[in-house]
Each structure stands twice: as structure tokens, then as C-alpha cells.
Length: 345
Image (cartoon, rainbow, N blue to C red; front, side, top):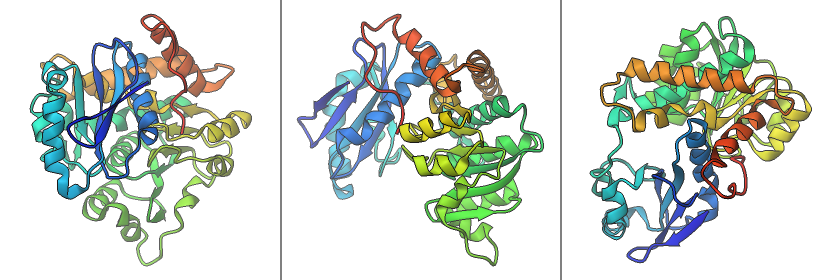
């Protein structure tokens, strides 16, 4: 992994693998950003690309500026990295404290298929595809979602995508958690969407009705059939994993499961679906034929996740590690050495 300091504005760019066809990752803004906090965001994408056998690499851009100086920092970035950005060698998207309007000087040169940015009832199509992938992975772990009770930790746009897909497959949304708390009960997916789109993290208060939402950590209680996690890197800690017990886990954002949590879950024989498997959908769309439809990419995502889950099922080291071995086998076909460290928080 290589980190380059920007010269025109305070900040840095991280490139994971040498000699990749393309580098892809978010641009984040914050005066106190440090490269070390972005490494697993980068590694997650590298493993996503390896899972779908693309010779591409994760990347990340950090602009170490205050929000008031964001426009100037983005203009400087667009100028300094102009060759890589306009050629398509480096593609980025808005991350922490940035939106598409602020990042427009860079995004105007993005050569990827833009279908992932389409609005799908309040969330992007990319978030919908993560929902498809995560629900498909969960279905593979538990033999179908019909009649299953699920919990979603990290109830954001991708979490809403998961809720919609799981409910359509017959699951009951029984628990959702944000940083502000945890809501319990049989949660209607339409009500969930309305609450989250209106109130964001505070939606758990709305969904709790007359009662108070419970503490966020209660989402890990082992009374569910599937637990989805994805609020941040290491969202599931060792303590969370101990609470989850034998509940199958599906990670859907970068390094959402910590290394300690994975060790605890493996010792308990609990299956864990890897974040870089559940989240392959957007990567399948970025360089897809422009003629492909939303439904085409939904089916491609489900087919890809099903194939990986089938190939890694029953491995003695569990599906997460088996997915790592599978991705690394592809990386060895075009890299002299494997990157150090797997996508774990």
C-alpha cells in the first residue's frame, strides 16, 4: 500500500496495489484525517475487485481541510491529479463530509457507468445492489430468508436496501440500530423507509413508538436468525460477537467485523459472510455495458454472490476466510506479493 502526500493542498492519496488497471475509492474531508484510518476502506475494495476477478485496486483520497475550505481543496485536487482523473485511472466518489456537488470538479471526469447513482425510492442504486448482495449472502447462510427474523446494525442507505430485499424475501425486520439507539419489534419496511429518510439516525426513536429506543449495543442479542452489520469498520467487536453467539452474521460495509470478532465467531462455529462478497454489486456495474438495466445488474449481483457463497460453503475455516482465500488466489495471478492484512476492522 502506497501513500502519497498531496502538494497543492493538505492531504494524501492511498493506492493499494501496484500496476492496477484502475484505482477506485472515496474522497473524504476532515482536518484531522490520517491515512491509517482509511487503510481498511481501501483493502475492502481491493478484495471486492478480486472477488469479481477484476485487476483493479482500492484507493482513498483524504483532504485535510475544514469544510469551509472544501471547494478550494477539491479544485486543487482536480488540478494536481488531473491526468489520473481525466484518464479514468483514478475514480472516486463522495465520502465523509463531501457530496456530489462539492466534488463535481473531479466527478465530471468519472468514466464509470453512472447507473449506480440512480435514485431508487430515496436511496442510490448502488445501495440497492448492496442490499441485494447482502440479502443473497444471508439467504445462502440460512437456507432462505422466508420466515426469518433479522437485525440490521448500521441502519443507513445500504441498510435500508437490505431491509427492502430481506422483507421481499419473506423475512421479518425485528431489530434495527443506529448510533442513536436500537428499535425492536416487527418493523414494517415502508415505515422504516419513511422514518429513516425523514430522521436518519434518530429514526429509531420514531420506530420505537411511545417507548425509548434501547442502547445501540443491544442489536447484537442472539435472538435473531441473521444479523447484518455495517455501520463502520470494526462495528462488530469481540464483545458484540460474544453476544451474537451462533447467529449467522453478514457484513456489508468495509471491515465491519473486527479480527477479534471473527476469531470469537469462528470458535463458536458461527458462519460469517464477508463484506467484500456482500458488497460486490456496485463494482459489477461500474464498467458494465451501458445497455444493461437495473434488473440485469440485480440478477448479476445475486448470481455472483450465490456462486461465491456456494464455492466457499462448508470450508473448515468458515465462509469469511474461504472468501479471503478465493480472492487472494486471483490476486496471485497478477501480483508478485499479496497485500499485508485482510479487510478486518
